[in-house]
Image (cartoon, rainbow, N blue to C red; front, side, top):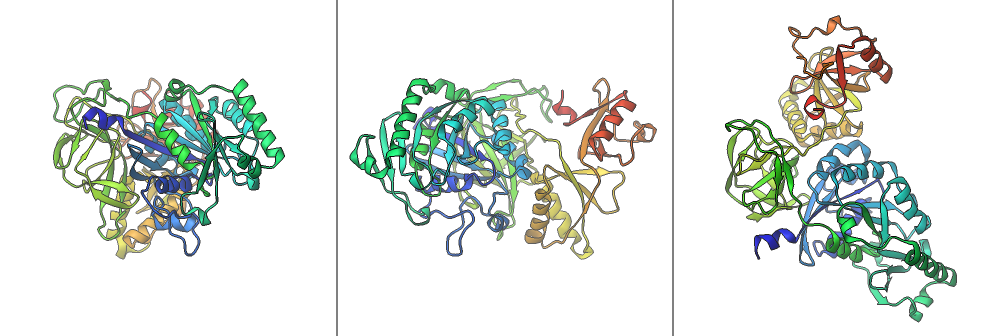
Length: 552
């Protein structure tokens, strides 16, 4: 197979949703239909059921929620699929946002009884800003749902996204018996299987078949006929170009837990989704290279290898205490043992321990193409956002940073664990589980942690204890707002007191000063009022929600 053909068959996508919409269940069913697993597990698993492949962390199994983004790879219908399961809970949205930089499309899962929810809306906006094509799956049709027509209207009115239904439900709740494929004009009648563990038997026929009339009561059958006629007359026709440009979303209905409509969704998504797209290199100065990198679009067919790291995870294999960096290949061909340049440091690195991923399981991979996600084991020097390439003129700046909303001090109450505690905390900070800052008012030995939501702090404590056998103590702080500081004209100020004296500023009670890991000064505020007061009283300075390098 030629390089162009290898690249064209890649499909790299993420599944996004509000918590409990069925995202991880759908991920598991994709693996079932892709023959990657033979028995599907339940997310909130019963005593004798297997755990899901994507939720591998013990805390995920206990809570029944996804905490860490996971990469799952399998072949299906001639496509090489890279599926990224993401946390739905808002407290872990930073991890999700980073993952969305590594995908070419997104599948949005919506609970058909609830419609578009808060976290769905936020994740959708991230996808839209990046121009990522979005496919929609209306899940849980085996339970009482809202009207399918109302759900389509909500997509257009709330998200401003034109919708075109591809798969339509036949009934809902107890009367949900199957779906109608509007493109082939075929009805797919499903049979339930115990616990949804196996592929659902299906009978394919036409809407006028007596078997369909026998399955549906008169009201449901009449309603379906009326809805389909309305869609044919007033609905948006399917437009592949608009879909791939992120302007229209194909809509599928089904039930992930019962395997209803899953194979149709998987086939339709892979057929209409986009192969790997070009990435943009930016112009920056890098160590060991005489001129800045080049701002240009890097085509996937560029013969030079390049990629960026969007996630780091330690201790996926508890037996080996290792560290794995997730790399999205953007151009060229990856070969195991190849030597690349780590652009942030300018050093040459040999990539000898490379793996294909399946949740926490892995196997050695010898080659990879644009669109693939590979795991690089070891390499403690790699950080989130780093570019690896054989072309020194390429530098990717893909990873966003977000303002933190909750803050706490973390300390080690047991001095005998200090070495393990420091090693564990340093690793978790490298992974980006939370951010850390230095605060001038910090108690002795305390590190200030910042996150989008408080559950992230629980994960830090749990992983310190379970992976490093190190105790930790969290101490609440009074701050709710963090801002980066510059002069009014946007030029930076130094956190060094010799060049910037914060004691001369007029501030409200409870305001504190500190610095990020790059020594950029930050200000911590107890509330929004104290933030506005600071701005009014110190006009020579300017506050920023994001680090200065992201606001220029």
